[in-house]
Image 1: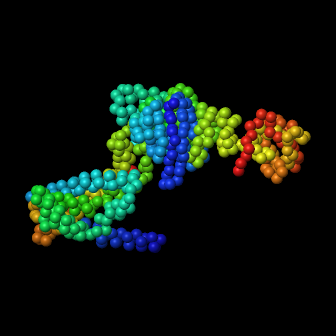
Image 2: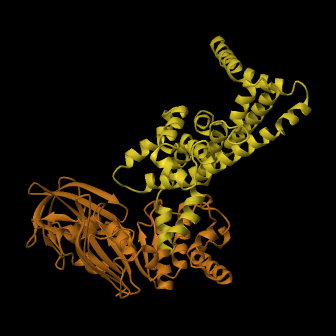
Image 3: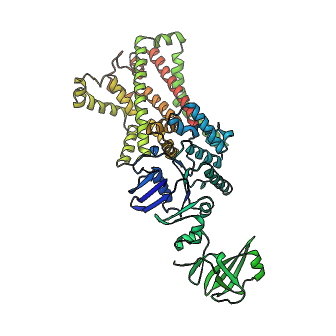
Amino acid sequence: MAIEVRDVTKSFGGTPVLRDVSVDIGSGSLTALLGPSGGGKSTLLRIIAGLEQPDTGTVVISGVDATRLSPQRRNVGFVFQHYAAFKHLTVRRNVAFGLEVRKRPKAQVRRRVAELLELVHLEQLADRYPAQLSGGQRQRMALARALAVEPEVLLLDEPFGALDAQVRKELRTWLRRLHDEVHVTTVFVTHDQEEAMDVADEIVVLADGVVEQVGSPHEMYDNPANPFVMSFLGPVTRLDGRLVRPHDIEVCAAEQPGSSAATVTRVVRLGFEVRVETRVAGQDVWAQLTRGSADHLRLDPGDTVYLRPVSNARTLAGSG
Amino acid sequence: MVTRYSLRVLALGYLLFLLVLPVGLIAWRTFARGLAPVLTALTSPSAVHAFEVTLSVASWAVVANTIFGIGAAILLVRHRFPGKRILGALIDLPLAVSPVVVGLALILVYGRFAPAGGWLERHGLQVIFSLPGMVLATVFVSLPLVVRAIVPVLEELGEEQEQAAHTLGATGWQTFRRITIPGIRWALAYGVVLCLARALGEYGAVAVVSGRLVGQTQTLTLFVEERFQNFDQPAAFAAATALALMAVVTLLLTKFLRPKD
Protein backbone atom coordinates (compact mmCIF):
# COMPACT_ATOMS: atom_id res chain seq x y z
CA MET A 1 0.00 0.00 0.00
CA ALA A 2 1.27 3.47 -0.83
CA ILE A 3 -0.93 5.25 1.68
CA GLU A 4 -2.65 3.79 4.73
CA VAL A 5 -4.94 6.08 6.67
CA ARG A 6 -6.07 4.54 9.97
CA ASP A 7 -8.91 5.75 12.20
CA VAL A 8 -8.31 9.43 11.51
CA THR A 9 -10.55 11.94 13.23
CA LYS A 10 -10.34 15.69 12.88
CA SER A 11 -12.45 18.57 14.19
CA PHE A 12 -12.25 22.26 13.52
CA GLY A 13 -13.38 24.27 16.54
CA GLY A 14 -15.62 21.48 17.84
CA THR A 15 -17.15 20.63 14.45
CA PRO A 16 -16.17 17.10 13.43
CA VAL A 17 -14.88 17.01 9.85
CA LEU A 18 -13.51 13.45 9.74
CA ARG A 19 -14.79 10.62 11.93
CA ASP A 20 -12.77 7.44 12.17
CA VAL A 21 -11.71 7.45 8.55
CA SER A 22 -9.63 4.53 7.29
CA VAL A 23 -8.56 4.34 3.65
CA ASP A 24 -5.96 2.23 1.81
CA ILE A 25 -4.54 3.51 -1.43
CA GLY A 26 -2.65 1.05 -3.58
CA SER A 27 0.75 1.78 -5.14
CA GLY A 28 0.50 3.23 -8.61
CA SER A 29 -3.27 3.73 -8.44
CA LEU A 30 -5.23 6.80 -9.44
CA THR A 31 -7.81 7.37 -6.73
CA ALA A 32 -10.58 9.94 -6.47
CA LEU A 33 -11.82 11.24 -3.13
CA LEU A 34 -15.38 12.05 -4.10
CA GLY A 35 -18.08 13.69 -2.06
CA PRO A 36 -20.22 16.75 -1.54
CA SER A 37 -18.61 20.01 -0.38
CA GLY A 38 -17.89 20.02 3.33
CA GLY A 39 -17.68 16.23 3.39
CA GLY A 40 -14.09 16.24 4.63
CA LYS A 41 -12.30 15.13 1.46
CA SER A 42 -9.94 18.14 1.21
CA THR A 43 -9.15 17.86 4.90
CA LEU A 44 -8.25 14.18 4.45
CA LEU A 45 -5.97 15.08 1.54
CA ARG A 46 -4.30 17.84 3.58
CA ILE A 47 -3.79 15.40 6.46
CA ILE A 48 -2.07 12.97 4.08
CA ALA A 49 0.18 15.84 2.92
CA GLY A 50 0.92 16.98 6.47
CA LEU A 51 -0.67 20.39 5.97
CA GLU A 52 -3.13 19.51 8.76
CA GLN A 53 -2.59 17.34 11.83
CA PRO A 54 -5.19 14.65 12.65
CA ASP A 55 -6.65 14.75 16.17
CA THR A 56 -6.29 10.97 16.40
CA GLY A 57 -5.26 8.21 14.00
CA THR A 58 -2.21 7.56 11.82
CA VAL A 59 -1.03 8.13 8.27
CA VAL A 60 1.48 5.69 6.80
CA ILE A 61 3.15 6.57 3.50
CA SER A 62 5.16 3.81 1.77
CA GLY A 63 5.42 1.86 4.99
CA VAL A 64 6.69 4.80 7.08
CA ASP A 65 4.55 6.30 9.83
CA ALA A 66 4.26 9.89 8.64
CA THR A 67 1.67 11.10 11.16
CA ARG A 68 4.08 13.47 12.92
CA LEU A 69 6.33 14.23 9.95
CA SER A 70 6.33 17.79 8.63
CA PRO A 71 5.17 18.26 5.01
CA GLN A 72 8.71 18.82 3.72
CA ARG A 73 9.81 15.38 4.97
CA ARG A 74 6.91 13.39 3.55
CA ASN A 75 8.00 13.51 -0.08
CA VAL A 76 4.51 14.15 -1.41
CA GLY A 77 3.59 16.34 -4.34
CA PHE A 78 0.64 18.63 -3.66
CA VAL A 79 -1.34 20.54 -6.28
CA PHE A 80 -3.69 23.26 -5.06
CA GLN A 81 -7.02 24.25 -6.57
CA HIS A 82 -5.80 27.78 -7.14
CA TYR A 83 -2.36 26.62 -8.35
CA ALA A 84 -0.29 28.34 -5.61
CA ALA A 85 2.10 29.44 -8.35
CA PHE A 86 5.21 31.28 -7.14
CA LYS A 87 4.36 34.59 -8.78
CA HIS A 88 7.85 36.06 -8.66
CA LEU A 89 9.47 33.09 -10.41
CA THR A 90 9.35 32.05 -14.05
CA VAL A 91 7.74 28.78 -15.08
CA ARG A 92 11.19 27.19 -15.25
CA ARG A 93 12.15 28.36 -11.75
CA ASN A 94 8.77 27.28 -10.37
CA VAL A 95 9.34 23.76 -11.65
CA ALA A 96 12.95 23.79 -10.43
CA PHE A 97 12.03 24.96 -6.92
CA GLY A 98 11.88 21.55 -5.21
CA LEU A 99 15.21 20.53 -6.76
CA GLU A 100 16.90 23.83 -5.90
CA VAL A 101 15.95 23.66 -2.22
CA ARG A 102 17.38 20.14 -2.22
CA LYS A 103 20.63 21.59 -3.56
CA ARG A 104 20.78 19.25 -6.56
CA PRO A 105 23.59 19.91 -9.06
CA LYS A 106 22.72 22.64 -11.58
CA ALA A 107 23.09 20.46 -14.66
CA GLN A 108 20.82 17.82 -13.21
CA VAL A 109 18.17 20.42 -12.31
CA ARG A 110 18.27 21.84 -15.83
CA ARG A 111 17.86 18.41 -17.41
CA ARG A 112 15.02 17.36 -15.12
CA VAL A 113 13.15 20.66 -15.56
CA ALA A 114 13.43 20.39 -19.34
CA GLU A 115 12.01 16.86 -19.20
CA LEU A 116 9.07 17.95 -17.08
CA LEU A 117 8.28 21.02 -19.14
CA GLU A 118 8.12 18.75 -22.16
CA LEU A 119 5.87 16.34 -20.30
CA VAL A 120 3.35 19.09 -19.50
CA HIS A 121 3.81 20.81 -22.89
CA LEU A 122 5.10 24.09 -21.48
CA GLU A 123 8.59 24.11 -23.01
CA GLN A 124 7.70 27.15 -25.12
CA LEU A 125 6.54 29.12 -22.07
CA ALA A 126 9.45 28.31 -19.75
CA ASP A 127 10.56 31.93 -19.34
CA ARG A 128 7.13 33.41 -18.71
CA TYR A 129 5.77 34.38 -15.32
CA PRO A 130 2.64 32.70 -13.94
CA ALA A 131 0.61 35.88 -14.49
CA GLN A 132 1.21 35.46 -18.23
CA LEU A 133 -0.30 31.96 -18.33
CA SER A 134 -3.89 30.74 -18.62
CA GLY A 135 -5.48 28.79 -15.77
CA GLY A 136 -4.93 25.46 -17.47
CA GLN A 137 -1.28 26.25 -18.17
CA ARG A 138 -0.74 27.33 -14.57
CA GLN A 139 -2.21 24.09 -13.32
CA ARG A 140 0.05 22.07 -15.64
CA MET A 141 3.00 24.06 -14.31
CA ALA A 142 1.93 23.28 -10.74
CA LEU A 143 1.74 19.61 -11.67
CA ALA A 144 5.23 19.63 -13.20
CA ARG A 145 6.52 21.40 -10.10
CA ALA A 146 5.03 18.73 -7.86
CA LEU A 147 6.39 15.91 -10.02
CA ALA A 148 9.90 17.38 -10.20
CA VAL A 149 10.92 16.03 -6.82
CA GLU A 150 9.75 12.51 -7.73
CA PRO A 151 7.22 12.26 -4.91
CA GLU A 152 6.04 8.95 -3.48
CA VAL A 153 2.48 10.15 -3.89
CA LEU A 154 0.87 12.97 -5.83
CA LEU A 155 -2.05 14.73 -4.14
CA LEU A 156 -4.37 17.05 -6.07
CA ASP A 157 -6.96 19.20 -4.30
CA GLU A 158 -9.84 19.91 -6.71
CA PRO A 159 -7.23 20.40 -9.43
CA PHE A 160 -9.67 21.42 -12.14
CA GLY A 161 -12.18 23.21 -9.94
CA ALA A 162 -11.16 26.72 -10.97
CA LEU A 163 -11.10 26.03 -14.71
CA ASP A 164 -13.87 26.40 -17.27
CA ALA A 165 -15.72 23.31 -18.49
CA GLN A 166 -13.86 22.85 -21.78
CA VAL A 167 -10.37 23.10 -20.28
CA ARG A 168 -11.43 20.90 -17.39
CA LYS A 169 -12.40 18.06 -19.74
CA GLU A 170 -9.15 18.35 -21.67
CA LEU A 171 -7.05 18.39 -18.52
CA ARG A 172 -8.70 15.38 -16.98
CA THR A 173 -8.09 13.27 -20.09
CA TRP A 174 -4.56 14.55 -20.03
CA LEU A 175 -4.14 13.70 -16.31
CA ARG A 176 -5.30 10.15 -17.03
CA ARG A 177 -2.73 9.81 -19.85
CA LEU A 178 -0.03 11.39 -17.72
CA HIS A 179 -0.71 8.90 -14.94
CA ASP A 180 -0.45 6.03 -17.39
CA GLU A 181 2.99 7.36 -18.36
CA VAL A 182 4.39 8.26 -14.93
CA HIS A 183 2.64 5.68 -12.68
CA VAL A 184 3.00 7.74 -9.53
CA THR A 185 0.38 6.95 -6.88
CA THR A 186 -2.14 9.75 -7.30
CA VAL A 187 -5.05 10.91 -5.16
CA PHE A 188 -7.31 13.70 -6.28
CA VAL A 189 -10.24 15.41 -4.61
CA THR A 190 -13.37 16.22 -6.58
CA HIS A 191 -17.05 16.84 -6.02
CA ASP A 192 -17.83 16.01 -9.65
CA GLN A 193 -18.88 12.34 -9.99
CA GLU A 194 -18.41 12.42 -13.75
CA GLU A 195 -14.82 13.59 -13.31
CA ALA A 196 -14.17 10.83 -10.75
CA MET A 197 -15.67 8.12 -12.99
CA ASP A 198 -13.84 9.41 -16.03
CA VAL A 199 -10.36 9.60 -14.50
CA ALA A 200 -10.02 7.31 -11.48
CA ASP A 201 -9.29 3.57 -11.10
CA GLU A 202 -10.70 3.68 -7.63
CA ILE A 203 -13.22 5.96 -5.95
CA VAL A 204 -13.55 6.72 -2.24
CA VAL A 205 -16.90 8.34 -1.46
CA LEU A 206 -16.72 10.59 1.61
CA ALA A 207 -19.73 12.33 3.09
CA ASP A 208 -20.13 13.98 6.48
CA GLY A 209 -16.66 12.88 7.47
CA VAL A 210 -17.38 9.17 6.92
CA VAL A 211 -16.24 6.81 4.14
CA GLU A 212 -19.47 5.65 2.47
CA GLN A 213 -17.96 3.25 -0.05
CA VAL A 214 -14.71 2.34 -1.79
CA GLY A 215 -14.52 0.68 -5.17
CA SER A 216 -13.88 0.93 -8.87
CA PRO A 217 -16.12 3.33 -10.78
CA HIS A 218 -18.30 0.75 -12.53
CA GLU A 219 -18.52 -1.48 -9.45
CA MET A 220 -19.74 1.47 -7.46
CA TYR A 221 -22.16 2.64 -10.11
CA ASP A 222 -23.69 -0.83 -10.46
CA ASN A 223 -23.57 -1.86 -6.79
CA PRO A 224 -23.88 1.24 -4.64
CA ALA A 225 -23.72 0.43 -0.94
CA ASN A 226 -26.50 2.79 0.05
CA PRO A 227 -28.99 5.29 -1.34
CA PHE A 228 -26.57 8.18 -0.78
CA VAL A 229 -23.84 6.66 -2.96
CA MET A 230 -26.39 5.63 -5.56
CA SER A 231 -27.86 9.10 -5.91
CA PHE A 232 -24.47 10.80 -5.72
CA LEU A 233 -22.93 8.75 -8.53
CA GLY A 234 -25.71 9.11 -11.05
CA PRO A 235 -29.34 9.99 -11.66
CA VAL A 236 -31.96 8.09 -9.66
CA THR A 237 -35.71 8.04 -9.52
CA ARG A 238 -38.11 6.26 -7.19
CA LEU A 239 -40.51 3.57 -8.41
CA ASP A 240 -42.68 1.60 -5.97
CA GLY A 241 -40.63 2.82 -3.04
CA ARG A 242 -37.33 1.63 -4.52
CA LEU A 243 -34.50 3.72 -5.97
CA VAL A 244 -33.69 2.86 -9.54
CA ARG A 245 -31.64 4.38 -12.34
CA PRO A 246 -33.93 6.10 -14.88
CA HIS A 247 -32.25 4.19 -17.72
CA ASP A 248 -33.18 0.94 -15.94
CA ILE A 249 -36.90 1.68 -16.25
CA GLU A 250 -38.81 -0.04 -18.99
CA VAL A 251 -41.69 1.96 -20.48
CA CYS A 252 -44.44 -0.25 -21.97
CA ALA A 253 -47.63 0.64 -23.82
CA ALA A 254 -49.55 -2.25 -22.28
CA GLU A 255 -49.66 -3.54 -18.70
CA GLN A 256 -46.94 -6.12 -17.84
CA PRO A 257 -46.33 -8.27 -14.75
CA GLY A 258 -44.90 -6.06 -11.99
CA SER A 259 -45.53 -2.78 -13.80
CA SER A 260 -47.22 0.35 -12.49
CA ALA A 261 -49.60 2.55 -14.40
CA ALA A 262 -48.22 6.04 -15.04
CA THR A 263 -49.48 9.24 -16.63
CA VAL A 264 -47.00 11.01 -18.91
CA THR A 265 -46.63 14.64 -17.82
CA ARG A 266 -43.78 15.81 -20.02
CA VAL A 267 -41.46 14.50 -22.74
CA VAL A 268 -38.08 16.23 -23.01
CA ARG A 269 -35.88 15.52 -26.01
CA LEU A 270 -32.16 16.04 -25.33
CA GLY A 271 -30.77 14.85 -28.65
CA PHE A 272 -30.16 11.14 -28.39
CA GLU A 273 -31.64 10.93 -24.89
CA VAL A 274 -35.33 11.39 -24.14
CA ARG A 275 -36.57 12.12 -20.63
CA VAL A 276 -40.08 10.91 -19.95
CA GLU A 277 -41.59 12.49 -16.86
CA THR A 278 -44.60 10.74 -15.40
CA ARG A 279 -46.75 10.51 -12.29
CA VAL A 280 -47.34 7.15 -10.62
CA ALA A 281 -49.85 7.15 -7.76
CA GLY A 282 -49.19 10.81 -7.01
CA GLN A 283 -45.36 10.46 -7.18
CA ASP A 284 -43.06 11.89 -9.84
CA VAL A 285 -41.08 9.20 -11.68
CA TRP A 286 -38.91 9.75 -14.69
CA ALA A 287 -37.42 7.38 -17.21
CA GLN A 288 -34.56 7.79 -19.62
CA LEU A 289 -35.12 6.37 -23.12
CA THR A 290 -33.22 6.42 -26.34
CA ARG A 291 -34.77 8.44 -29.12
CA GLY A 292 -35.60 5.27 -31.06
CA SER A 293 -37.62 3.63 -28.29
CA ALA A 294 -39.38 6.90 -27.43
CA ASP A 295 -40.39 7.38 -31.08
CA HIS A 296 -41.65 3.82 -31.20
CA LEU A 297 -43.94 4.44 -28.20
CA ARG A 298 -45.16 7.78 -29.58
CA LEU A 299 -45.49 9.37 -26.16
CA ASP A 300 -47.53 12.49 -25.52
CA PRO A 301 -48.43 14.24 -22.26
CA GLY A 302 -51.59 12.74 -20.82
CA ASP A 303 -50.95 9.21 -22.18
CA THR A 304 -51.06 6.27 -19.81
CA VAL A 305 -48.02 3.98 -19.87
CA TYR A 306 -46.74 1.14 -17.67
CA LEU A 307 -43.37 1.31 -15.93
CA ARG A 308 -41.23 -1.45 -14.40
CA PRO A 309 -37.54 -1.91 -13.68
CA VAL A 310 -35.70 -3.89 -16.39
CA SER A 311 -34.94 -7.47 -15.36
CA ASN A 312 -31.29 -6.98 -14.32
CA ALA A 313 -31.77 -3.54 -12.77
CA ARG A 314 -30.02 -2.78 -9.50
CA THR A 315 -32.53 -1.19 -7.13
CA LEU A 316 -32.23 -0.10 -3.52
CA ALA A 317 -34.92 0.27 -0.89
CA GLY A 318 -35.13 4.04 -0.81
CA SER A 319 -35.08 6.07 2.33
CA GLY A 320 -35.56 9.81 2.59
CA MET B 1 -17.24 75.34 -13.78
CA VAL B 2 -16.90 78.14 -11.27
CA THR B 3 -16.95 75.77 -8.29
CA ARG B 4 -14.36 73.53 -9.93
CA TYR B 5 -11.91 76.36 -10.49
CA SER B 6 -12.53 77.97 -7.11
CA LEU B 7 -11.90 74.60 -5.43
CA ARG B 8 -8.61 74.25 -7.27
CA VAL B 9 -7.54 77.77 -6.35
CA LEU B 10 -8.50 77.16 -2.75
CA ALA B 11 -6.53 73.88 -2.55
CA LEU B 12 -3.48 75.32 -4.27
CA GLY B 13 -3.55 78.49 -2.16
CA TYR B 14 -3.83 76.44 1.01
CA LEU B 15 -0.82 74.34 0.05
CA LEU B 16 1.09 77.42 -1.10
CA PHE B 17 0.91 79.16 2.26
CA LEU B 18 1.26 75.97 4.28
CA LEU B 19 3.99 74.11 2.40
CA VAL B 20 5.47 75.68 -0.67
CA LEU B 21 6.14 79.16 0.72
CA PRO B 22 7.87 78.12 3.97
CA VAL B 23 9.98 75.38 2.38
CA GLY B 24 10.74 77.57 -0.64
CA LEU B 25 11.79 80.44 1.58
CA ILE B 26 14.20 78.23 3.49
CA ALA B 27 15.78 77.11 0.23
CA TRP B 28 15.89 80.68 -1.01
CA ARG B 29 17.46 82.01 2.20
CA THR B 30 19.94 79.12 2.18
CA PHE B 31 21.24 79.89 -1.29
CA ALA B 32 20.79 83.68 -1.08
CA ARG B 33 24.57 84.19 -0.85
CA GLY B 34 25.50 81.39 -3.25
CA LEU B 35 26.76 77.88 -2.74
CA ALA B 36 30.04 78.59 -0.92
CA PRO B 37 28.65 79.64 2.51
CA VAL B 38 26.28 76.65 2.41
CA LEU B 39 29.15 74.24 1.89
CA THR B 40 31.16 75.93 4.65
CA ALA B 41 28.21 75.64 7.04
CA LEU B 42 27.57 72.01 6.20
CA THR B 43 31.23 70.98 6.49
CA SER B 44 31.83 72.48 9.92
CA PRO B 45 32.87 69.79 12.45
CA SER B 46 29.64 70.02 14.45
CA ALA B 47 27.49 69.82 11.28
CA VAL B 48 29.40 66.79 9.99
CA HIS B 49 29.09 65.16 13.37
CA ALA B 50 25.35 65.85 13.42
CA PHE B 51 25.05 64.16 10.00
CA GLU B 52 26.91 61.14 11.31
CA VAL B 53 24.76 60.88 14.44
CA THR B 54 21.56 61.20 12.44
CA LEU B 55 22.61 58.54 9.94
CA SER B 56 23.77 56.19 12.65
CA VAL B 57 20.58 56.58 14.72
CA ALA B 58 18.37 56.28 11.64
CA SER B 59 20.19 53.16 10.35
CA TRP B 60 19.95 51.34 13.65
CA ALA B 61 16.28 52.28 13.96
CA VAL B 62 15.53 51.09 10.43
CA VAL B 63 17.33 47.78 10.99
CA ALA B 64 15.49 47.19 14.28
CA ASN B 65 12.10 48.12 12.88
CA THR B 66 12.61 46.04 9.73
CA ILE B 67 13.40 42.90 11.70
CA PHE B 68 10.64 43.56 14.22
CA GLY B 69 8.24 44.63 11.46
CA ILE B 70 8.62 41.43 9.42
CA GLY B 71 8.37 39.27 12.53
CA ALA B 72 5.34 41.08 13.95
CA ALA B 73 3.55 41.13 10.59
CA ILE B 74 4.02 37.36 10.13
CA LEU B 75 2.84 36.82 13.70
CA LEU B 76 -0.26 38.98 13.16
CA VAL B 77 -1.21 37.51 9.78
CA ARG B 78 -0.13 33.87 9.92
CA HIS B 79 -0.68 32.88 13.54
CA ARG B 80 -3.58 32.71 15.93
CA PHE B 81 -2.83 33.23 19.59
CA PRO B 82 -4.44 34.82 22.63
CA GLY B 83 -3.58 38.50 22.88
CA LYS B 84 -3.25 38.99 19.14
CA ARG B 85 -5.57 42.01 19.15
CA ILE B 86 -3.65 43.54 22.03
CA LEU B 87 -0.41 43.15 20.06
CA GLY B 88 -2.06 44.83 17.06
CA ALA B 89 -3.21 47.74 19.21
CA LEU B 90 0.19 48.09 20.92
CA ILE B 91 1.93 48.35 17.58
CA ASP B 92 -0.25 51.34 16.68
CA LEU B 93 0.32 53.04 20.02
CA PRO B 94 3.34 55.13 18.92
CA LEU B 95 1.12 56.90 16.38
CA ALA B 96 -1.05 58.19 19.20
CA VAL B 97 1.59 59.05 21.81
CA SER B 98 3.39 62.38 21.56
CA PRO B 99 7.15 61.96 20.96
CA VAL B 100 7.94 64.12 24.00
CA VAL B 101 6.00 61.69 26.18
CA VAL B 102 7.96 58.83 24.61
CA GLY B 103 11.21 60.55 25.54
CA LEU B 104 10.16 61.15 29.13
CA ALA B 105 8.91 57.57 29.46
CA LEU B 106 12.26 56.23 28.24
CA ILE B 107 14.09 58.36 30.81
CA LEU B 108 11.81 56.94 33.54
CA VAL B 109 12.86 53.40 32.60
CA TYR B 110 16.43 53.78 31.38
CA GLY B 111 17.59 56.91 33.24
CA ARG B 112 20.60 56.60 35.56
CA PHE B 113 18.39 56.61 38.69
CA ALA B 114 15.88 54.06 37.41
CA PRO B 115 16.42 50.34 38.24
CA ALA B 116 16.80 49.16 34.64
CA GLY B 117 18.92 52.13 33.57
CA GLY B 118 21.08 51.89 36.69
CA TRP B 119 21.74 48.20 36.14
CA LEU B 120 22.67 48.79 32.48
CA GLU B 121 24.97 51.67 33.44
CA ARG B 122 26.78 49.54 36.01
CA HIS B 123 27.39 47.08 33.19
CA GLY B 124 28.90 49.79 31.03
CA LEU B 125 25.93 50.75 28.88
CA GLN B 126 24.71 54.30 29.18
CA VAL B 127 21.32 54.58 27.51
CA ILE B 128 19.99 58.06 28.24
CA PHE B 129 22.01 61.07 26.96
CA SER B 130 23.75 58.69 24.58
CA LEU B 131 23.26 56.86 21.29
CA PRO B 132 21.33 53.78 22.58
CA GLY B 133 18.61 56.00 24.07
CA MET B 134 18.29 57.99 20.85
CA VAL B 135 17.99 54.79 18.85
CA LEU B 136 15.35 53.52 21.30
CA ALA B 137 13.36 56.75 20.98
CA THR B 138 13.53 56.66 17.18
CA VAL B 139 12.60 52.97 17.06
CA PHE B 140 9.60 53.73 19.27
CA VAL B 141 8.19 56.56 17.15
CA SER B 142 8.65 54.73 13.83
CA LEU B 143 7.62 51.29 15.11
CA PRO B 144 4.32 50.80 13.20
CA LEU B 145 5.54 51.93 9.79
CA VAL B 146 7.11 48.68 8.52
CA VAL B 147 4.51 46.40 10.14
CA ARG B 148 1.58 48.33 8.73
CA ALA B 149 3.11 48.41 5.24
CA ILE B 150 3.58 44.61 5.18
CA VAL B 151 0.42 43.31 6.87
CA PRO B 152 -2.09 43.90 4.04
CA VAL B 153 0.27 42.49 1.40
CA LEU B 154 1.02 39.44 3.49
CA GLU B 155 -2.72 38.90 3.95
CA GLU B 156 -3.32 39.14 0.23
CA LEU B 157 -0.40 36.84 -0.56
CA GLY B 158 -2.12 34.03 1.37
CA GLU B 159 -0.63 30.89 2.79
CA GLU B 160 -0.84 28.57 -0.20
CA GLN B 161 2.47 29.50 -1.81
CA GLU B 162 4.23 28.88 1.50
CA GLN B 163 2.44 25.56 1.94
CA ALA B 164 3.37 24.58 -1.61
CA ALA B 165 7.01 25.36 -0.84
CA HIS B 166 6.81 23.16 2.28
CA THR B 167 5.41 20.21 0.35
CA LEU B 168 8.23 20.67 -2.18
CA GLY B 169 10.73 20.11 0.61
CA ALA B 170 11.64 23.66 1.60
CA THR B 171 12.49 24.27 5.26
CA GLY B 172 10.91 27.13 7.18
CA TRP B 173 13.88 29.40 6.50
CA GLN B 174 14.05 28.50 2.77
CA THR B 175 10.34 29.21 2.44
CA PHE B 176 10.71 32.54 4.21
CA ARG B 177 13.68 33.63 2.11
CA ARG B 178 12.56 32.29 -1.28
CA ILE B 179 8.77 32.75 -1.11
CA THR B 180 7.63 35.07 1.69
CA ILE B 181 10.24 37.83 1.32
CA PRO B 182 9.97 38.10 -2.51
CA GLY B 183 6.19 38.17 -2.12
CA ILE B 184 6.30 41.21 0.17
CA ARG B 185 9.43 42.91 -1.16
CA TRP B 186 7.79 46.08 -2.52
CA ALA B 187 5.69 46.59 0.58
CA LEU B 188 8.77 45.96 2.70
CA ALA B 189 10.80 48.50 0.71
CA TYR B 190 8.00 51.03 1.04
CA GLY B 191 7.82 50.49 4.80
CA VAL B 192 11.59 50.78 5.16
CA VAL B 193 11.68 54.07 3.23
CA LEU B 194 8.82 55.50 5.29
CA CYS B 195 10.59 54.41 8.46
CA LEU B 196 13.84 55.99 7.28
CA ALA B 197 12.10 59.29 6.51
CA ARG B 198 10.48 59.32 9.93
CA ALA B 199 13.78 58.45 11.65
CA LEU B 200 15.73 61.18 9.83
CA GLY B 201 13.19 63.83 10.77
CA GLU B 202 12.53 62.81 14.38
CA TYR B 203 12.92 65.68 16.84
CA GLY B 204 10.79 65.53 19.99
CA ALA B 205 11.64 62.17 21.52
CA VAL B 206 15.30 62.44 20.56
CA ALA B 207 15.50 65.97 21.97
CA VAL B 208 14.39 64.68 25.37
CA VAL B 209 16.62 61.58 25.64
CA SER B 210 19.74 62.96 23.93
CA GLY B 211 20.53 65.77 26.34
CA ARG B 212 21.43 67.83 23.22
CA LEU B 213 25.14 67.56 23.81
CA VAL B 214 26.78 69.47 20.95
CA GLY B 215 29.33 67.36 19.13
CA GLN B 216 28.13 64.24 20.98
CA THR B 217 24.42 63.51 20.83
CA GLN B 218 23.34 66.20 18.44
CA THR B 219 21.34 64.98 15.44
CA LEU B 220 20.71 67.07 12.36
CA THR B 221 17.28 68.24 13.56
CA LEU B 222 18.74 69.22 16.94
CA PHE B 223 21.61 70.95 15.13
CA VAL B 224 19.14 73.09 13.14
CA GLU B 225 17.32 74.11 16.29
CA GLU B 226 20.51 74.87 18.26
CA ARG B 227 22.11 76.91 15.43
CA PHE B 228 18.87 78.87 14.99
CA GLN B 229 18.71 79.69 18.73
CA ASN B 230 22.32 80.90 18.55
CA PHE B 231 21.57 83.27 15.66
CA ASP B 232 23.70 81.24 13.25
CA GLN B 233 21.03 81.39 10.58
CA PRO B 234 23.17 80.31 7.59
CA ALA B 235 24.07 77.01 9.27
CA ALA B 236 20.50 76.46 10.48
CA PHE B 237 19.06 77.07 7.03
CA ALA B 238 21.71 74.99 5.26
CA ALA B 239 21.09 72.00 7.52
CA ALA B 240 17.31 72.47 7.23
CA THR B 241 17.60 72.44 3.44
CA ALA B 242 19.71 69.29 3.62
CA LEU B 243 17.03 67.63 5.77
CA ALA B 244 14.28 68.74 3.39
CA LEU B 245 16.28 67.37 0.47
CA MET B 246 16.67 63.99 2.14
CA ALA B 247 12.93 63.99 2.80
CA VAL B 248 12.19 64.77 -0.85
CA VAL B 249 14.46 61.94 -2.00
CA THR B 250 12.77 59.42 0.30
CA LEU B 251 9.38 60.75 -0.79
CA LEU B 252 10.31 60.18 -4.42
CA LEU B 253 11.50 56.69 -3.54
CA THR B 254 8.12 55.87 -2.02
CA LYS B 255 6.44 57.18 -5.16
CA PHE B 256 8.51 54.77 -7.22
CA LEU B 257 7.81 51.85 -4.93
CA ARG B 258 4.11 52.43 -4.43
CA PRO B 259 2.51 51.44 -7.76
CA LYS B 260 4.29 48.13 -8.06
CA ASP B 261 2.13 46.47 -5.40
